[in-house]
Length: 296
Ligand code: AVW
Image (tube, rainbow, N blue to C red; front, side, top):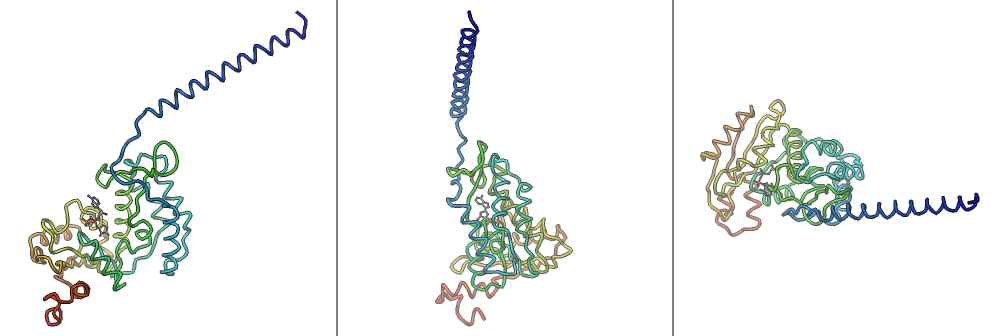
């Protein structure tokens, strides 16, 4: 066999070997891909990530700064980046409040004393009230709350990006991407609150005035600083058409008072705070409770 023949045989062997390697690799690659595809992706019961989430969050960020210049200049793209860093490539049932700490830092805001308005079981009324008066601020009126209010999001373990098909519902797992976020945001707001902190409660609901597992009880009251919060003032508001099931001297309120005082905070309570009753009367002007003589 001459040199040329030996060279061509060597080349032929190398080509066969390379081909075998390619075929084997693609077989194993396919097998791996099929194995992954066969693992059933976990189904969550909540809706998936809100479509166009990035545009909504970044748009709200610029909108808030234009509405409230006192917010200062925030880096809206960095805020999006911190959200994705908190949830991308992670199990949506294993996201903690700590995962959102950087997001909390880049959205930091000074909360004016005496302006915080917390709430429990009054979601609709409290926000109608702060829109109408602008004299108080709920969590959803703060920069962080405004950015994410009403939105849904979760990542996926398979790679970067959001899961647009389904996300865990609020109670589906303890540390889910949505509930951990709102706990972190509520704690941040309560810690930053000072002076009198107001709380709007619903005097017409059955059962406890604030659920045992409510964010108000489990996160906000324990997060307030007794050195900077001078008073926790509860407003117990009855539905205009509803019954007066709870008032400041009800057992449920006295129990909440004790809980507040156990956290070294000072308590006060007012039934049917008139500015809120007046707002209820805008929509029910003929109701007997809206008679000028009864609200004045
Ligand atoms: P709430 P909180 N499923 O009226 O004190 C779905 O009792 O808790 O008031 N969503 C839930 C669930 C649940 N089981 N539990 C709570 N939520 C969410 C931040 C949901 O978005 C503010 F600063 C529901 O509308 C207030 O001071 C909301 O929690 C305080 O937390 C209200 O439940 C209100 O939370």
